[in-house]
Image (cartoon, rainbow, N blue to C red; front, side, top):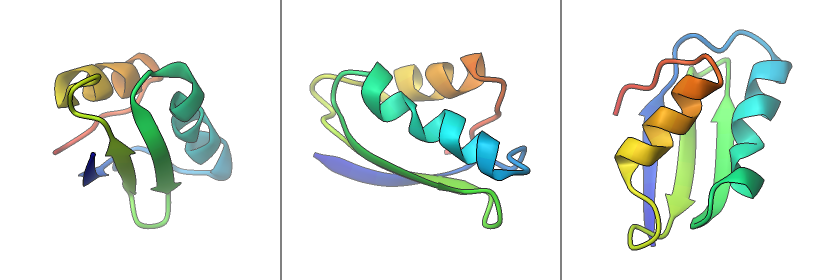
Length: 69
């Protein structure tokens, strides 16, 4: 398992946070997601053998947000 924090500067409300945190159920290999629009970041713990950073960034982008590793 890897735990990483990513900048997501275009979150602006609690709905944004809930959308990003919903990826926990949508992507295999994610153990936990914690997002904060105030800090402009999300922290994920995931199994790097089942999910890559590229896949995570793409999934967040599909929700309409920009991720900076």
